Length: 159
Image 1: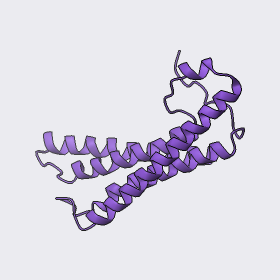
Image 2: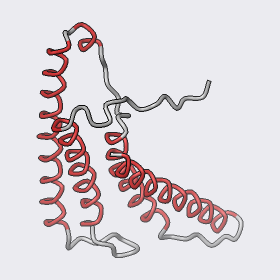
Image 3: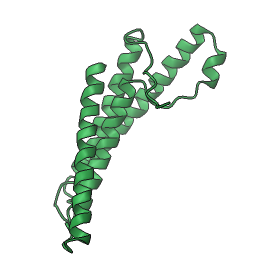
Image 4: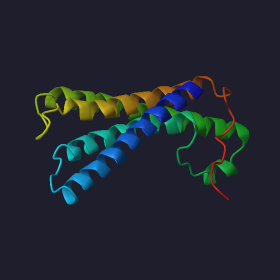
């Protein structure tokens, strides 16, 4: 899990850095030089979708998704395990369905191109496929190996 978290986090960090630098350059070019860079909006949209979907994998790998443990706190250890399994299976089902639907959508819209760069819309849909399938795999791994890296993520908030 650690390797998956590091790889997804590195991809996200690099993508955010590219997004920030590209946006700053676009603002500079538009308002200082008076020469807008037209393609930055399309690349920003593509990057944001990929950042969110790969970030979902990183969050799941490091147990950082939001949870509400109100019911969990009231249950016995055995019932908590059952609830964890049911929620995990439901999540996997939804994520696999989401990945499949994104793949089907990507196949049907692959001929469509973005206005400026002419990039196939397939690449937008592929981000959802990768993110949903990757998150489903991490969730499945946690169900199969519940004690592997059972420690929750450290609290990284600043005090």
